[in-house]
Length: 323
Image (cartoon, rainbow, N blue to C red; front, top):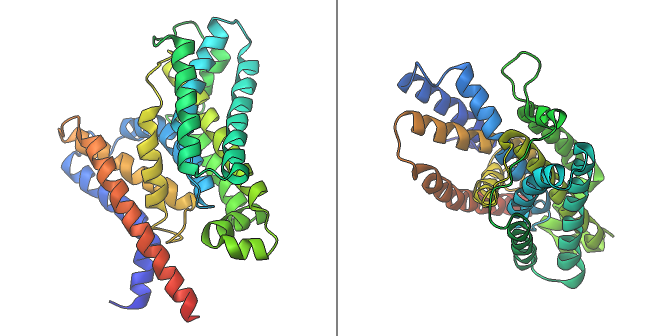
């Protein structure tokens, strides 16, 4: 196999796989899978997973891991309904407070990691557990029920009279903004340098404390926004919601690092990976797969994604050394 073909497959592998899966499931389930209803359901239901994957992807560019993203989504969706229906705050103020909370949690994570020197695994696992405890205390482990403002519920509506969910539009807009930030602005280049070679970043005057902290703050902001959109979809506060987003989020971000820019996390690869996971699970479910297929598939894909991303990173290091 020629080197150019290998490079093309490693770059566009996820896109090719996505097209292949859509074709296979369309042939196997022609009356249910290739329909606007399936597209609309996938775009709406998987948008939160995509936002969660983008949230964990940002600090991952600097080789840091945010395990508090799932808890941030969970507490955001609980507070979104609780503050509106129990504390009677206007919906726009609730949104601002929750987004500010996300930034604050990200700031705490960033300080613990970059200034105190705690491993990102430990620091964010601790803050995530603390958020989960606050969520359980606030909700008393029960559902939070109430009538949300129509303007807030409309955040999870559809684009005009089309079948395109607004949540899907949020993912596209967020993805575009993050692509510009990471691929076209110094902030992204600095994060990638910090992730690949912290010593080189230090010698070039890149302040790891500042940029790592900002990465965690942005991650918290995206996670809080995902929680707001999730509550607009559910319209019921669930004390158990949140943790199920963690594994798919990391799977999407790590699997995305095997494509488009093999060896490093990137926006387009992450969104393609989330789409591959969503299409596979939806197709298997329509073919009658049992309920445990999704967590089993996500777990196996996470292991595979880590292996492939590590291999791709090593290949890039060897190529850089040869140059």
